[in-house]
Length: 423
Image 1 (tube, one colour):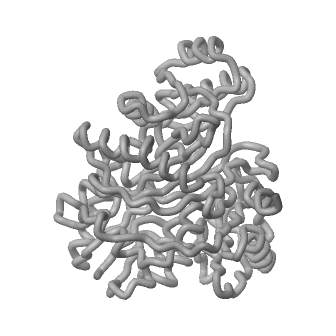
Image 2 (cartoon, one colour; image 1 turned 90 degrees about the vertical axis):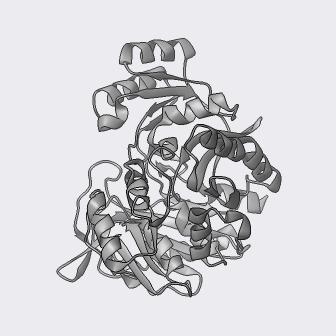
């Protein structure tokens, strides 16, 4: 098969690494990719926002299958454009991608199909949003409705913080994403990420993970796109997975089909496990980043047939096998992230990874033949182990051999699971 992977981040490097292992693969391209992805695929310098250019490339190379990594092109309708040419595409239509593209859309689906989630209201102006917040009190959650690269959510512990978050949205901190705001109840519990392939009619549960969103150790500081993750998430017991499928995934799948937007792709359900059970915080319509990195390390099956079955509507005919060994990834970010940071800082050397270890590239580029950091989140240093504690030790030992002066990381990734292992 001739395959094109769309995207350039750590998630796409993990997908490329796994897809490249498939015996079905004959030619593999990535647009635009990154230096890590370039080890596995031919990099194509196309602007992925230019759907016509992507379609022309697919026609020119007789591409059989397109895997779309990031959310922005999906929300912008790249899957629809490529399917119009008869291409087989992994990723939802623009209409179905609204599950991530609009927080309000998702909340409305939850309300219509009785999917457990925090109570909410939608607002298109600041005074009404603030009046509602004052009536509800803190803690409370304020979300920019649209795509804000993982940064449009404020879990406000005080009223002042919530009111300031409303101002940020309506004053343009998140661009068009903040033109509407969703205010929702604060859910108390433990967060988990749940992944499930869906072809519109059938669903195949994948793996669970736990992300570390806050920039500082002990889960302090501002929210980021994710500073590290591990899989599986111990809080997601077999019973919790079963309940999530029955109470959240299946009604969503049914609801999307009934509303004329059948969902084909990967459901990434951000969950809060509360006293009542699993409740939906949000949906994403692509693999998580950095959750994808730990899931691909644990996946024993060939990824390509799984994604192909999702795109072709034959998900009931495949299954996924997983290693029992946990995997853990630590994000190395540019100093200053998630605020302003210096770009093009030199990464002098990366360590050779042993068995069950991998350094995934997230925000890197080659400048004059030298590796530089171009993003906020730059490297995902990943390892497996017999326990989460062992996977953590291996990941940090690998990370300590990276030579990059401008990098920083959290040193406590996996702390919840490690406390459980000790108990």
